[in-house]
Length: 92
Picture 1 (cartoon, rainbow, N blue to C red):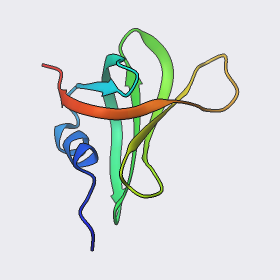
Picture 2: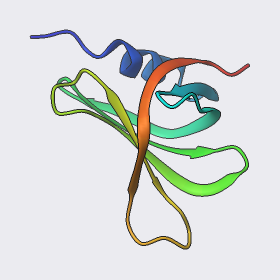
Picture 3: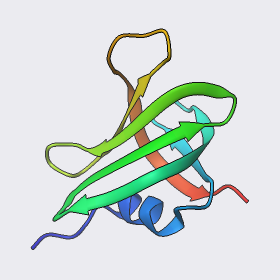
């Protein structure tokens, strides 16, 4: 069995503490994970973000090389992809 994605493992291990994520476009924000789980290698998480009332979903890419972030705002229909995580660290 192949290794788990190292960013996904870090997010999972830091939960339930707030996590500072850096996205591939340079965006940095603190997220609060409400759930994280692995299905073999595949990763999925639900989160909220400070100063934003949207819901966020993190999922592993098809090849499990990246962690992708989707956003669904209160006034939006569906999810939009906002980027991929390049770094995860404890926010405190």
